[in-house]
Image (cartoon, rainbow, N blue to C red; front, side, top):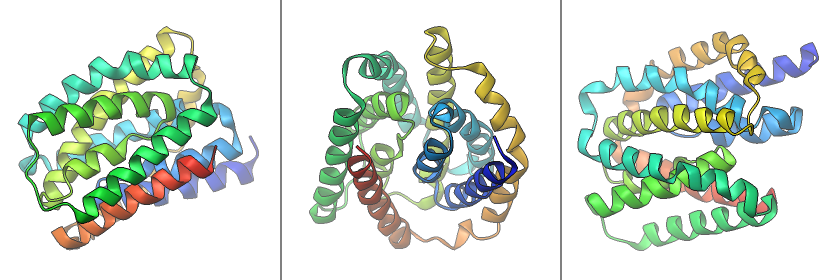
Length: 236
């Protein structure tokens, strides 16, 4: 990989870490397309591995706001669905998978625009965990379902809970990808190499994350879901 390519990847990781450190979402949506263009072999292992230290930091920083009950249900469902995400890589062509996930994400975001405010319960948590387990393992992008479930909750609760759910899921997905030969452990070296860029972005997010109030967060969440769905569909 050339110096120019590494520089582009470092800037992308830094920007993505800032966005996710501020909002709780967006890292994979920003990094996965760029990494895929620069070197398709970086997806999804590099993206998943890079998110682990970032989510550790966000979960610790926002630990007082963690929704432990929601995180527990989501994580249990997400872990149960992880093998299904791996199966999707084997049985569904990439084009159809991205189209299906993207269309479902856009539809959910559009429905959310018209739906009244709600407090998520067990069914919502389990549903979000299952969908995230399928899509993140298969595509590296799993934020939209969690974002939609927590769209009416305080921003700190969204950031902390999503970070914990991501963290457990990323470790499980990487372990399964390596165990089945679908991932190359050598790709972890790039995540380590770009840790300084990730740290800079995460540190900068610390300066502004508290300025994002609930209405702004909900607009960001719905916009994030719409954009991520469109990217998945257009990328097929």
